[in-house]
Structures are given as C-alpha cells and as structure tokens.
Length: 103
Image (cartoon, rainbow, N blue to C red; front, side, top):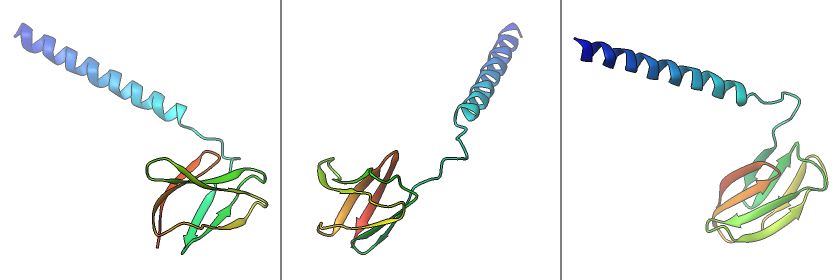
C-alpha cells in the first residue's frame, strides 16, 4: 500500500511539473504582433518575397548547406529569379527559412 501511495504521489508531481513547464513554454513563445511575417511564394524558378526588409539578402542553399545564390532585397515586395537546376533547395531571408522544390 505504501509503495502504491508513493508511486501515485510521484506520478502526480511529474504531471504537475510537466504542466507548469508547458505553461511556461507558452509564455516564452509569445511573439510581438507588430512584426509581420515574411512570405515566400515559389512559381517555377521565380521567388516572390513579401514583407521583407529592404537591403537584406535572400540566400539560396543546396540541401547539403552550400550557398548557391544570394539576392539583395530592393523593395518590401520583391521578386527574384533563381538560376538553379530543378531540385530541393533551402531559402533563407532574415529569420525565415523555407525548404522549396524548384520544378
């Protein structure tokens, strides 16, 4: 009986700790609503960038992490034409990273 009671108390403590940790995690993941998310749209080999900061760079990486191309963003809504063969690539601009397939 004592073993069951101690096991039960231990389980309740673990569940409470996990619940508190989950609540704490939610608080730390709150984002500032004033920051607009960057949108990347792929059509063929054309990448449309929306809500980006002018002067930042759109970097194109292969799946093994080698930088292939880099484009300077010249307006908030810009368009870049990729000069890469068909395949899977990683696009990075500021804190936004996307995996894309060029067809």
